Image 1 (cartoon, one colour):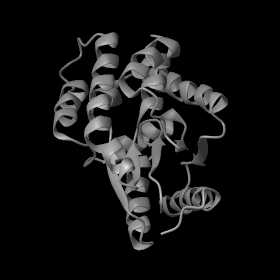
Image 2: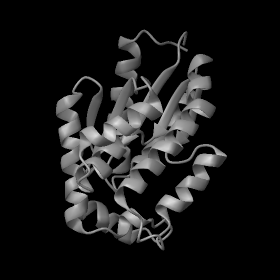
Image 3: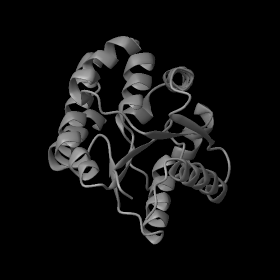
Length: 215
């Protein structure tokens, strides 16, 4: 691969995107791609510390704009410290969440407004947007049922929000799909892990072929 590629995965709570991302990363390594796996908020020490504040279930008093600003701050540090250097070195970066999460969660579900949240994030990311985004779609009720069944999963502050909140998150993503149809590819996450992985890997490999990215 001669140039870096920035690929993100998105989805509501319980969509299984993190599990699929790890499987995609392992398969790409087997296919001899120079790839790194990371996540938001997090990926590097400073951003992981911010993550602890954002997702701490005790921080119920957090203002919605504070929340949006903390996500943007973590995103900025993660970009300049890890993502951009990797891309400049010609690596593929696959990241669990990026700006679309802020637009869907804080912009739409929190009611701040997508345009307002975009302004915050434009300052943080400048012009760095994903080349490809895999969106794992699932009904909010089904997603929350999955979370309840997996006792070993990290339960964060957003998991505890109402079903109305999670419905608004999904609607936010649907709006983003209409805005960025070429970048965001939809994967039906209600299927088995094996089927979801196969569909996601097919979308990714077809994109890599189109972009003439070879190992």
